[in-house]
Length: 357
Ligand SMILES: [Zn+2]
Ligand SMILES: [Zn+2]
Image (cartoon, rainbow, N blue to C red; front, side, top):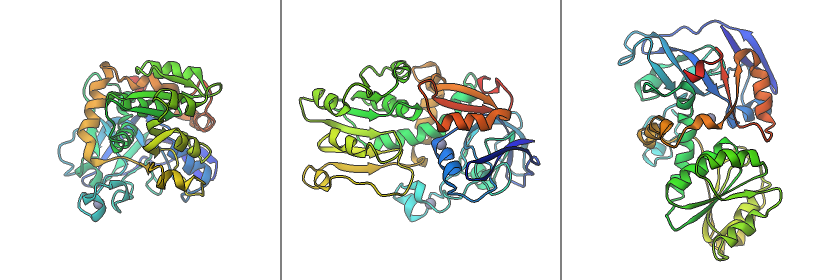
């Protein structure tokens, strides 16, 4: 089969590799589509993980082989595969911080080499503990693969929004309107809160408007901090979500929050140093918090949102700007790595058009 193999920092190659063999309790899934995620890009560009690997973890496809004893699954079923699941029993799981669980950190979906998701290929092997612990989710009829592939990113976003505990009389500022920023803002809006969205590109605000986000801030010409103050009688936003990576906008996010408000770092996926005003946390009582990866506690709610929302105001395929065949995956990842006005969510499909089925 064809697969995009990570061979080292910034070195991706389209190669022919064996279709993975499966064992008892495992599934073989034919990939229909796989989203390119910011964390894939980080791994490719920083060399944080050893080579070789096959990345891609936002995948949906069809079961083509069922290992002996893999209960409840049949060939032909359309599914989304989570590449990791928590144990549900360790100290971290009991504290609902599933992303820190040792079992969760172990990846259980692979297209070969060190398991790393494997979605940027034609077939993936889903390991037994993923199959047994709700890591494989059936897609209802009428929902295309590419909507279903948003299950994992929506989970990560909903988890973050829940941490903010928003109320209907509150104002939220979401900085960055890439696909994740739009999802964060759309889910924040569902709590009843007023949501301001900031981005440099009008094209992104136009997409956000499709999700009912009607307080756009043109970051190229307007000051997001001033807009947050103007919208709140000079207090500042109750919550600010930073959906732009790096450290440059952390201070802006802190400045835009009201005293006692919250600042959520959602895109700061690298360990590095950043400076911030400690007095804003101590004296102004602003809370700095973060959220990473998915939560096993909200699987059903996320499935309702993604599957039920397809024809009900939450059509996430609107966020897709590019669909590339596997043969052009290197180019797809290049575009995803250098976002422009016209690029949003980028999907890789082994068979062109399969994601829309
Ligand atoms: Zn992801
Ligand atoms: Zn655990």
